[in-house]
Image 1 (tube, rainbow, N blue to C red):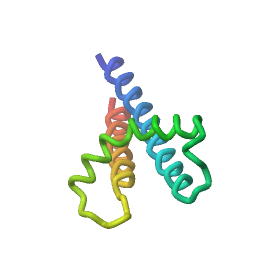
Image 2 (image 1 turned 120 degrees about the vertical axis):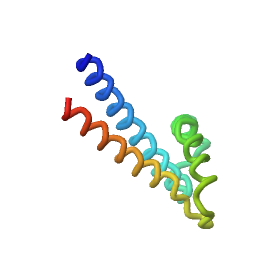
Image 3 (image 1 turned 60 degrees about the horizontal axis):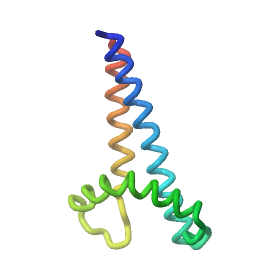
Image 4 (image 1 turned 180 degrees about the horizontal axis):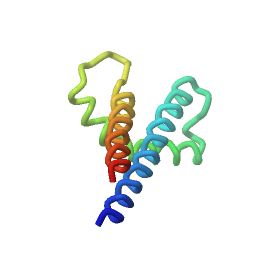
Length: 98
């Protein structure tokens, strides 16, 4: 039973690492688009932006409903990353205790 739990925790940690990179890629690409460094009319750029947007936007939308309006400043990616770090810490503690 412990082997199943250990492997499940490891898979969850890897999935959270992947989602962490998706959030960071989404933020960086949105900055690059905002500063007109890359253009979304490029199909490859559009595909990556669309992929990261579809993965992150449902979670961002829920957080934006809770967070106060700060004008043009969006804190939802920071909150998501902090949440990922927190959950990963808990999962690593569980992994080391087993």
